[in-house]
Image (cartoon, rainbow, N blue to C red):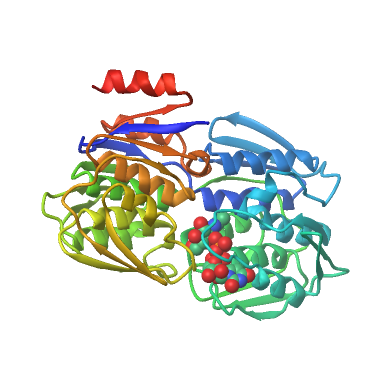
Amino acid sequence: MEQYIMKGGNPLAGEVLIGGAKNAALGILAAALMTDEDVVIENLPDVNDINVVLEAISAIGASVVRIDRHTVKINGESIHGVSVDDEYMRKIRASYYFIGALLGKYKSASVPLPGGCNIGSRPIDLHIKGFRALGARVEIEHGVVMAHAIDLVGCHIYLDKASVGATINIMMAASLAEGQTIIENVAKEPHVVDVANFLNSMGANIKGAGTDVIRIRGVRRLHGTEYSIIPDQIEAGTFMCAAAATRGDVTVRNVIPKHLESISAKLTEIGCEVVEFDDAVRVVGKPNQTRTNVNTQYYPGFPTDMQPQMTVALALADGTSIVTENIFDNRFGYVDELSRMGARIQVEGDVAIVTGVERLTGAQVNAPDLRAGAALVIAGLAADGYTVVDKIGYIQRGYEDFEGKLRGLGAAIEKVDSEKEAMKFRLKAG
Ligand code: UD1
């Protein structure tokens, strides 16, 4: 079983190049199937969730050519079935995007109910509500979502929650529906805008992405395109929090600073120096960082996917911070692990009361999910002594070469898969 082993205490310093946004890529890869022409996607992150989706795309017959590590050419002409069912797809949340993409193109899709990170109940009722409003019959049997339509017809949909997944999914299906669809109370996250831009580059007619209302005029067909995915807001934010927690000095490059504003604002509030450049942000941690409150919100609010990483920075700041999780109902699962490292955090429902401590101490901990796993690595890099993070499969789902990028910033961290390798690391790190 692979683990990360690290010796904490080095302030991270230097520059790190941020990859393409995983959550945009997941939508874009599914949307790429909606044409029979070639689609070239650049700036694709090389992470496990993406590779699982590429395999599923091949499995239904589409051609997938990896041009280089971050570029792929997809052609959906040879798709021979609308049933996506493999063991791995069941584990990832974004398998749901195959419903919208295949339903839009073939008017039929059969996809297992999504898995994904264990961060609370994650229903897809809003996706289904949207597909039904477009005229599809949707049933769930034996854990599989089956959607069929004779015709998809534009409609007016109000989302009860501004769900990222539902917004993208309905937008995809509606792109090939007859007439106009209006979706209200949509998600405004950068990856929603990126998927809309991608679909528009294929000939879709989507307006309003990034605002509360998206209007889609259905087109008869979509065509090929070449498209470069936006930088990953959460990967960038993770390194920014790592800079703060280790009192380092890190510049995240190849980012869109606007997408990072809520994170930059919180780091500034706790006393870090944050400098924005055209496509980079520099975070300089300070010795006496102080408390603040964090409320996760839909974009442009503070992202729920940054909550655990920010909590680690607060666990090492002066004073008591209140972190409120408003998006998911079980996203403090990592707190027990952090407590084993000496953090003082009390969870009451959706709220974590974080009393800053002067130091954390290394321990053996388990990554409970993707972002919390990254947060535990940050904690390990800031802690005294050795930390071992188990179950790093979660982290590898969403971070490309996490340990390599951290080493580039001076971290003493290694991926190991035996006690012997761990021993070797300890001997080397001293
Ligand atoms: C996406 C991201 C995830 C991020 C989340 C919020 C992907 C693959 N995952 O997840 O990393 O944490 O956005 O930014 O892009 N909800 C419903 N019914 C639905 C759909 C959602 O009640 O049909 C609720 C959820 O339970 C949650 C809220 O809406 O409380 C937001 O969820 P949503 O934006 O859909 O998250 P995901 O698309 O699953």
